[in-house]
Image 1 (cartoon, rainbow, N blue to C red):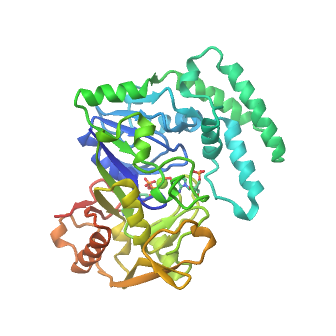
Image 2: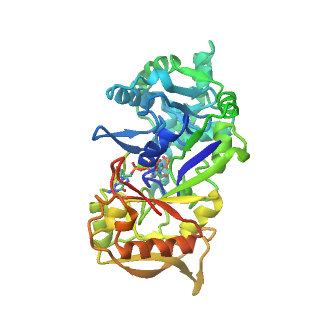
Image 3: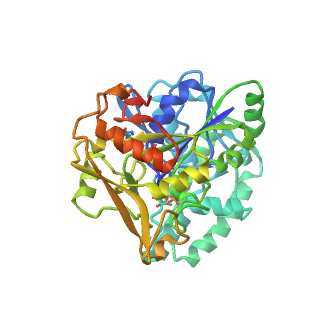
Length: 421
Ligand code: GDP
Ligand code: IMO
Ligand code: MG
């Protein structure tokens, strides 16, 4: 049996915290896509830790953590993360496995990401510059090197061949930075990665499922950044939706039970691209300040706005979401008035559907107002004690989406999560 936790917006919904909370109920926690573009924040012993590629179950003893075949792995960030995790006393070598089919992010992928972003000028995606796009391009272009190749004696020869191909592309993009320091770091980190348990992830996970073990699949990014269904071309390069769990771990769709979608009580986006409910005003700044909305990976300020139910309903549809965890509800505590987007106005027409090309059209969000609760909810533990205005806000969202909010997160700590009943 496999349950999934994934983001329903443009990433940074608080997936890390929620996976960390639910992890004790599962045997295996597995990442199925993305790479170090992800930044999942957890609090362990009141200390903040940001995970990029290691699954957010790593701090729970006795749980197996798997980096699945759908992930693109940067050995340099991986080594750094392992060291950070070890500083909490976690013996990561005991319970962290990597699929041999996961592709490697090479230093030249990072260089290509940087070069192609600067070549785009004003049309920049605003990528995390971690080499994600170029690494996935090599995968689908049937060029890339995989973690399993680290155990092959021809690895260096294959690396040099690919390096030459990349150099031609970099020359074409006028990129002439010296990346020899990155390469040195990379080869050091390869030695480190090689010592891990590199396994056949698909056999491993299916054997485990057959033995009755349970799996929690941890999504990275968000549904609106999905390469097929997101706001293309302002997306990431993987399938972030629940379908990605099958291809990213090698499990059959029948195995998936709960699809737990994580959404903020409002909305944020980092990087370029359409964001219909974005607030370029004082209210947007207030959300950013109260919500500490700065990227966990790049430190960039996140764009902020009201919750977009048109996008959220679309995300529920493409993922088959069975329940929603609403995060950062406490960030709205001091607002007099809240708004939610219930439809889009495009070319004089109203629609509740996501249009094909969101970036080339003028979308006016149609907003519905709600009274704010104006109370500090961050220490609340029981749903019954939550303000009536908040219950009304959530009830409207439940009805609009046809999916229930089952948990409300009211602070960054593990314990700050309220079950809805
Ligand atoms: P992820 O990428 O989806 O795991 O999310 P990030 O870690 O990038 O961003 C979420 C941020 O919000 C982190 O700084 C979390 O510590 C914080 N956070 C998570 N849940 C809550 C919540 O309910 N309230 C508040 N105030 N912060 C939260
Ligand atoms: P988590 O898992 C928020 C965004 C980037 C950029 C676009 C493409 O922490 O939610 P990429 O580097 O993937 O080629 O960038 O996607 N992006 C994210 N935004 N959270 C993330 O991950 C993101 N990963 C990528 O800002 O707009
Ligand atoms: Mg994040």
